[in-house]
Image 1 (cartoon, rainbow, N blue to C red):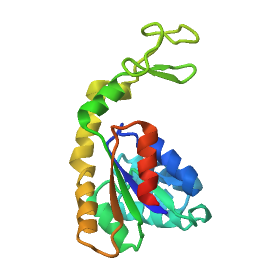
Image 2 (cartoon, one colour; image 1 turned 60 degrees about the vertical axis):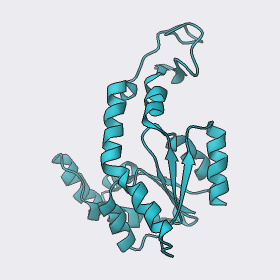
Image 3 (cartoon, rainbow, N blue to C red; image 1 turned 90 degrees about the vertical axis):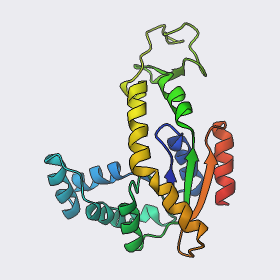
Length: 217
């Protein structure tokens, strides 16, 4: 099972990725993890990527694709893999295709922006324990305070509305085009194209999971 998970930040990809990994026994591969591992291991590509990152540059697509090919050749990818946050752009998707990296499914978790903002900006966290709440969907017993310790809850910077809106803008600008790219390939009947599945991410987590599994069956 080789698949790509698409969706805006806050659409619930991380949760679904965990279900998919467990069910199919495949690793979740993110470019960030891959880059860190290659830099730590001191591989030729890792050293090249480190030099670029140290200079504050963006790692070139050819290096990323090289790392992807190295990563999916490892033993834990024998049954497949799950790409999370990759490819991010059409040039990356094209380069991956040209490099012969085959994908079975592209799964899009679709959630409207307004709901994502609502979900993320309402999150509150108890820092010491990692317990999370939501002002609307899972409120603490006492507003602004942890149920167990009574200590104050915080809103992480990542969850602030202006940050969420910025991240959504970047997604729509750079990555959303992949939705069209893959769905058009699938619709055109290209035999080498991955199957494209769109799931309504506004449902309960378990309902989303069940639909993903049904689509991949």
